[in-house]
Length: 207
Image (cartoon, rainbow, N blue to C red; front, side, top):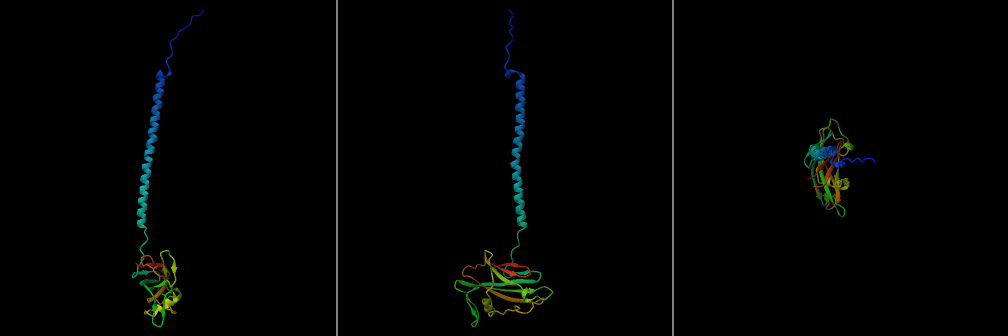
């Protein structure tokens, strides 16, 4: 009968030194990797926030630097290549004209009378079809043309020097006026504007 060999009982694997060495290595690697990822994640928002702040600051600075210049106002002079232009006055009227040539707005309307002047600063005469003209702008940028009859009647009240059929010669300044019919109560100097259609269009603020 063969003799049975009785050996020593084997140690569980979790009690062996190499198992714990592997555990330590895995944990160390995980800690190293996680720490790296956490560092990157923590830095990313900070970097993004810093960039956004810098961008906003640049936009604000650029916005201030690139702000459109203020519009010329009533009484100011604006110079284009060919003309020196200024608005003298803007007022509302219930009627315009003289005793024998009077115009009144239609029901529900009122007149906006604009007096202005312009000078030929070029070196050549300017024909009647190339001289400036006016339009009235409401807050919605709707353009109103002058009322011809009311403008003609208003001219009888004033000592205007605008050229009708002749050229405007160099160095000559003329005064003109236009009247616009608008809805009564709608006109407000704070929000309406006058557009001068010349060799370069220019918009005047009224207040």
